[in-house]
Amino acid sequence: MAERYDVIVLGAGAAGLMCAARAGQRGKRVLVLERAEKPGKKILISGGGRCNFTNIGSGPANYLSQNPHFAKSALARYTARDFLELVESYGIAWHEKTLGQLFCDGSAKQIVAMLSEECAKGDADVRCGEEVASVEHDGDFTVATQTATYTAPALVIATGGPSIPKMGATGFAYDLARQFGLKVVEPRPALVPLTLGGEEVLFREISGVSAPVVASAGKASFPEAALFTHRGLSGPSILQASSYWSPGEPVVVNFLPGHADGWLLDAKREMPRATLKSLLRDALPDRLADILSEKLGISTELGNAPDKELRAAEDRLRRWEFRPNGTEGFAKAEVTVGGISTAELSSKTMEAKRIPGLYAIGEAVDVTGWLGGYNFQWAWASGVAAGEAL
Image 1 (tube, rainbow, N blue to C red):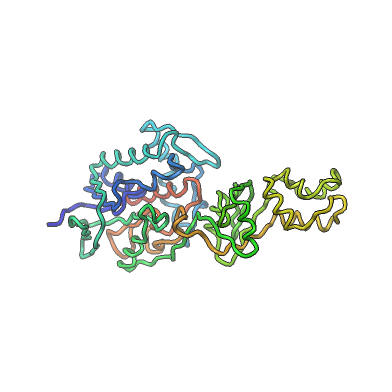
Image 2: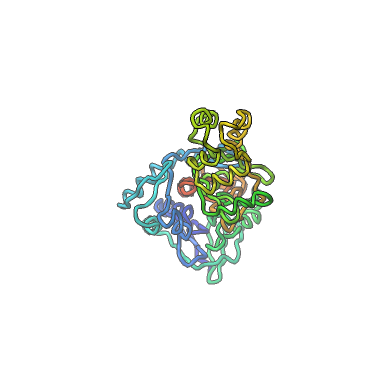
């Protein structure tokens, strides 16, 4: 005999727990099914174990989607300040890092404990270690696991995307969406390190070196650190740019974000005996300065270098093109770009337009945030939107 609920939420991650808590506290009988042995596994590893739980500057401009307007409604109705109030109501100490990023002073476990307590307040039944075997829809939704069968008039897809498969992540949300005839925007890894090949393999020799830069892909630019790795490029600015990068396109790096235009010509007048390598060593880590000056090929003293050559060198340092041959894939991606098409969903409720009672939230949907707490804010906001509508 199937157990009956008002709502079945698939996935006990950030979005699923938030949705279950809100729906439960509104009087709905909620079941959460999670295949992992405990809830909130991605929350626990986020932010180096301290959970970058939101970004105080979160807004629609910080998200990628085929419909850039879709996220506006949910983000406006449940803001970073709203989540911060919840965090503070539990006495969880927090701090702000760079660029509006908010972290727990203590541990990400505090956020999972808070969400679990919020679910308990609404009597939501959270069951872990439950692998979904099948989902059927015949008026109601019937979900079978290896141990039991459950039915409900509403089903919420909150199983995330395929990023970080070692945490148990899969493309299950997309399979389910396709089963119900919902379009899926082709998923690809995002916030992911980029790999270099060809002549650019030289840069692998400085693996471990990082520098403050501005990295650009497409029309998006991000001023933060870039890190050279044994496979290519990483660091916050590169991870951000990777979400906007398309295969075959360059990633453009400005190695001189803190220097005024004409810096090299000024240096030539003030320090004609200096070399490009020594000047770059003052501005950048030595090993990076050495490889850049070697590639620029100016070995003479600045006073002996033609102005035209120095202008060209500076221009290249401000617009250094790397041509990645790929990414490190879903295994190293923090999130997924793409997912269940927003064209299929109500931006107000997250409900499928053509299938009443079916909802999709969080990373399963084609809404992807920047690095720095934005994806959690989308999880909270979309979870609340669905939880209020159920």
